Length: 381
Ligand SMILES: N[C@@H](Cc1ccc(O)cc1)C(=O)O
Image (cartoon, rainbow, N blue to C red; front, side, top):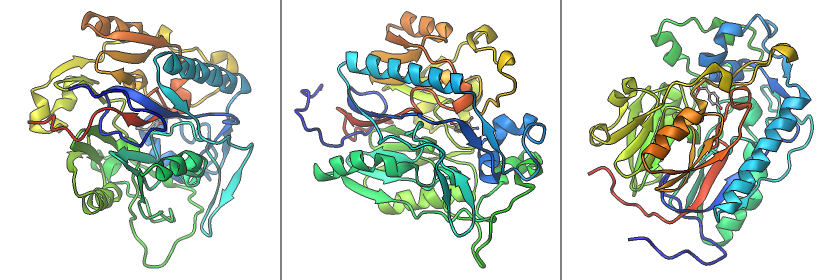
């Protein structure tokens, strides 16, 4: 039964990816003018950046890889377009506080250039009326959620619960490379040159990103690709007792929202049939829209700008954002997907997003849906 539109101010309520969206946090990217390519960054993005590591970053791995200003400006233009489109759809858009320029941070064990709060999906999961801050993989992201605190306090004052996974120290021995070594990949290009300190007796830590989860009412799918993630799944089960967490066994190295997006009960968007086997049995009989092939001409040509590292894959645009079960916001530069969705009866809101492979996020990554109308429904039986 559709529920009536809630009145303002809205209470945190978000159990799924597709019921009517009323309020959303949208990331921002001012001053995103470098990637700090330390070992935690190299390992996190390894699947995408391995082929070019060493060639374009120093052996110490501590280099600031500059991003041309034109690209940052164009990214911000595209995000402004997304904000407008969401507002036109009747969604209230909240933003993080503004990031500063060239913010260098340090812990007792390492230092890093802070990443702006662009992919706000990554460091938080909203589970019903609970904010769960997760445990960052990348050192440069450890304080990113500080800029979301004004919004989180607003929800807290309106009754939300607020939890945080233990903050990882991210020392030299904290991160598990098992996902890559199981595939016989040599990760030395990521880990060579590590300069972070160690803590005696501390081994692998709980390290996990919100974007490793997909929410389906009372069920949550959780991608677990190594021991860091396994510790986080246990934490989720111990601390959120009224939801069911389903382990997806190494469906990807970390995030799963450019692999799988549930569109409505019984229908999902999936990168390819090869991913079906990772899903819970009940989902394997859902109707599936497979990501259509896309053309290289839909991606910008960066050859005139010199070298820029693509940290995201060609599948980034699977990463759409649902306004409701019939309306989706999709990158206008993926016309093949728009066509398939329209044929299936969706209303598509096209929004241009050019540099998705450089900043590693699509519309699902850039947003954190804080108020949707659905509840803890059972969509899996
Ligand atoms: N291999 C991961 C790495 C990644 C994660 C987050 C990003 O924003 C970008 C890339 C992915 O492709 O999902």
